[in-house]
Length: 184
Image (cartoon, rainbow, N blue to C red; front, side, top):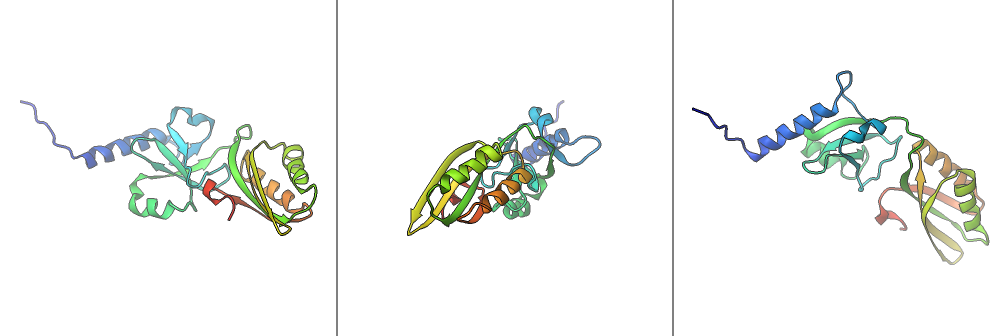
Protein backbone atom coordinates (compact mmCIF):
# COMPACT_ATOMS: atom_id res chain seq x y z
CA UNK A 1 0.00 0.00 0.00
CA UNK A 2 1.43 3.35 -1.10
CA UNK A 3 0.93 6.51 0.95
CA UNK A 4 0.54 9.62 -1.19
CA UNK A 5 1.66 12.82 0.47
CA UNK A 6 -0.66 15.75 -0.16
CA UNK A 7 1.66 18.73 -0.68
CA UNK A 8 0.39 22.26 -1.12
CA UNK A 9 1.61 24.41 -4.04
CA UNK A 10 3.33 26.67 -1.49
CA UNK A 11 5.25 23.72 -0.04
CA UNK A 12 6.27 22.52 -3.51
CA UNK A 13 7.39 26.05 -4.42
CA UNK A 14 9.40 26.36 -1.19
CA UNK A 15 11.07 23.00 -1.86
CA UNK A 16 11.93 24.07 -5.42
CA UNK A 17 13.46 27.30 -4.14
CA UNK A 18 15.47 25.48 -1.46
CA UNK A 19 16.70 23.00 -4.07
CA UNK A 20 17.78 25.83 -6.38
CA UNK A 21 19.60 27.58 -3.55
CA UNK A 22 21.42 24.34 -2.64
CA UNK A 23 22.50 23.93 -6.27
CA UNK A 24 23.78 27.51 -6.46
CA UNK A 25 25.84 27.49 -3.29
CA UNK A 26 29.24 25.87 -3.24
CA UNK A 27 30.53 23.79 -0.34
CA UNK A 28 33.03 26.50 0.62
CA UNK A 29 30.78 29.54 0.36
CA UNK A 30 27.31 30.82 0.97
CA UNK A 31 27.70 33.64 -1.56
CA UNK A 32 26.52 33.43 -5.15
CA UNK A 33 29.40 34.56 -7.37
CA UNK A 34 28.16 36.26 -10.54
CA UNK A 35 30.48 35.79 -13.48
CA UNK A 36 31.61 33.46 -16.21
CA UNK A 37 31.21 30.34 -14.04
CA UNK A 38 27.51 31.19 -13.78
CA UNK A 39 26.70 30.03 -17.30
CA UNK A 40 25.02 26.88 -15.96
CA UNK A 41 22.84 28.83 -13.53
CA UNK A 42 19.74 30.56 -14.87
CA UNK A 43 20.15 34.16 -13.74
CA UNK A 44 19.20 37.55 -15.13
CA UNK A 45 20.02 41.12 -14.21
CA UNK A 46 16.92 42.87 -12.89
CA UNK A 47 15.65 45.58 -15.24
CA UNK A 48 14.28 47.69 -12.37
CA UNK A 49 17.81 48.62 -11.23
CA UNK A 50 20.17 47.31 -13.97
CA UNK A 51 23.06 46.27 -11.71
CA UNK A 52 26.62 46.34 -13.03
CA UNK A 53 29.75 44.73 -11.58
CA UNK A 54 30.92 46.67 -8.55
CA UNK A 55 27.38 47.43 -7.36
CA UNK A 56 26.34 45.83 -4.08
CA UNK A 57 23.89 43.13 -5.15
CA UNK A 58 21.74 40.25 -3.93
CA UNK A 59 20.03 37.38 -5.68
CA UNK A 60 16.27 36.86 -5.63
CA UNK A 61 15.11 33.34 -6.47
CA UNK A 62 12.06 33.59 -8.73
CA UNK A 63 9.69 30.73 -9.45
CA UNK A 64 9.93 30.61 -13.24
CA UNK A 65 12.81 32.92 -14.20
CA UNK A 66 15.75 31.59 -12.19
CA UNK A 67 17.65 34.10 -10.08
CA UNK A 68 17.25 37.84 -10.59
CA UNK A 69 20.21 39.97 -9.54
CA UNK A 70 19.23 43.29 -7.90
CA UNK A 71 21.20 46.20 -6.46
CA UNK A 72 20.88 46.36 -2.68
CA UNK A 73 19.52 49.90 -3.10
CA UNK A 74 17.03 48.84 -5.78
CA UNK A 75 13.58 50.44 -5.45
CA UNK A 76 12.17 46.90 -5.03
CA UNK A 77 14.81 45.63 -2.56
CA UNK A 78 12.96 46.46 0.66
CA UNK A 79 9.73 44.84 -0.51
CA UNK A 80 11.51 41.71 -1.77
CA UNK A 81 13.56 41.32 1.41
CA UNK A 82 10.66 41.91 3.80
CA UNK A 83 8.03 39.85 1.98
CA UNK A 84 10.23 37.12 0.50
CA UNK A 85 13.28 36.93 2.76
CA UNK A 86 13.51 33.17 2.30
CA UNK A 87 14.14 33.73 -1.44
CA UNK A 88 17.08 36.12 -0.94
CA UNK A 89 20.62 34.86 -1.44
CA UNK A 90 23.87 36.72 -0.98
CA UNK A 91 25.61 37.58 -4.23
CA UNK A 92 28.73 39.38 -5.36
CA UNK A 93 30.53 39.95 -8.64
CA UNK A 94 33.64 38.21 -9.83
CA UNK A 95 36.19 40.18 -11.83
CA UNK A 96 35.05 40.28 -15.45
CA UNK A 97 36.76 43.07 -17.37
CA UNK A 98 35.95 41.60 -20.79
CA UNK A 99 32.16 41.89 -20.34
CA UNK A 100 30.18 45.09 -20.91
CA UNK A 101 27.01 46.16 -19.11
CA UNK A 102 24.49 48.75 -20.29
CA UNK A 103 23.81 51.69 -18.00
CA UNK A 104 22.59 55.24 -18.41
CA UNK A 105 24.14 58.65 -17.78
CA UNK A 106 22.15 61.83 -17.23
CA UNK A 107 24.16 64.90 -18.24
CA UNK A 108 23.22 68.57 -17.71
CA UNK A 109 25.04 71.76 -18.50
CA UNK A 110 25.41 74.96 -20.46
CA UNK A 111 24.79 74.45 -24.17
CA UNK A 112 27.82 75.36 -26.28
CA UNK A 113 29.04 74.70 -29.82
CA UNK A 114 30.95 71.41 -29.95
CA UNK A 115 29.88 70.21 -26.50
CA UNK A 116 28.39 66.94 -27.80
CA UNK A 117 31.61 66.30 -29.73
CA UNK A 118 33.66 66.81 -26.54
CA UNK A 119 31.41 64.42 -24.59
CA UNK A 120 31.48 61.69 -27.23
CA UNK A 121 35.28 62.07 -27.58
CA UNK A 122 35.71 61.42 -23.85
CA UNK A 123 33.35 58.44 -24.00
CA UNK A 124 34.55 56.81 -27.23
CA UNK A 125 38.21 57.79 -27.55
CA UNK A 126 39.41 58.31 -23.97
CA UNK A 127 37.46 55.47 -22.33
CA UNK A 128 36.86 53.19 -25.33
CA UNK A 129 33.20 52.91 -24.32
CA UNK A 130 30.48 52.04 -26.83
CA UNK A 131 27.34 54.13 -26.80
CA UNK A 132 23.95 52.62 -27.50
CA UNK A 133 21.95 55.85 -27.62
CA UNK A 134 22.32 59.58 -27.10
CA UNK A 135 19.46 62.02 -26.51
CA UNK A 136 19.95 65.73 -25.93
CA UNK A 137 17.45 68.56 -25.47
CA UNK A 138 18.45 72.21 -25.29
CA UNK A 139 16.31 75.03 -23.96
CA UNK A 140 17.37 78.62 -23.22
CA UNK A 141 21.07 77.77 -23.36
CA UNK A 142 20.78 74.81 -20.96
CA UNK A 143 21.05 71.23 -22.18
CA UNK A 144 19.84 67.99 -20.64
CA UNK A 145 20.70 64.65 -22.10
CA UNK A 146 20.91 60.95 -21.55
CA UNK A 147 23.48 58.55 -22.91
CA UNK A 148 23.22 54.77 -22.72
CA UNK A 149 26.75 53.34 -22.49
CA UNK A 150 28.39 49.93 -22.09
CA UNK A 151 30.82 49.78 -19.15
CA UNK A 152 32.85 46.97 -17.57
CA UNK A 153 32.06 47.68 -13.93
CA UNK A 154 31.21 50.37 -11.39
CA UNK A 155 34.81 51.61 -11.18
CA UNK A 156 34.92 52.05 -14.97
CA UNK A 157 31.61 53.95 -14.81
CA UNK A 158 32.75 56.14 -11.88
CA UNK A 159 35.95 57.08 -13.74
CA UNK A 160 33.95 57.94 -16.87
CA UNK A 161 31.58 60.14 -14.83
CA UNK A 162 34.53 61.97 -13.21
CA UNK A 163 36.08 62.67 -16.62
CA UNK A 164 32.77 63.86 -18.12
CA UNK A 165 32.30 66.29 -15.21
CA UNK A 166 35.59 67.92 -16.22
CA UNK A 167 34.28 68.82 -19.70
CA UNK A 168 33.78 72.60 -19.88
CA UNK A 169 30.07 73.46 -19.75
CA UNK A 170 28.96 70.28 -17.98
CA UNK A 171 27.28 71.01 -14.63
CA UNK A 172 26.24 67.50 -13.59
CA UNK A 173 26.63 63.87 -14.59
CA UNK A 174 24.81 61.06 -12.81
CA UNK A 175 23.95 57.44 -13.37
CA UNK A 176 20.39 56.30 -13.87
CA UNK A 177 19.27 52.71 -13.82
CA UNK A 178 15.85 52.64 -15.35
CA UNK A 179 15.12 53.79 -18.92
CA UNK A 180 12.14 55.70 -17.46
CA UNK A 181 14.57 57.94 -15.54
CA UNK A 182 16.42 59.29 -18.60
CA UNK A 183 15.55 62.99 -18.55
CA UNK A 184 13.67 64.60 -15.70
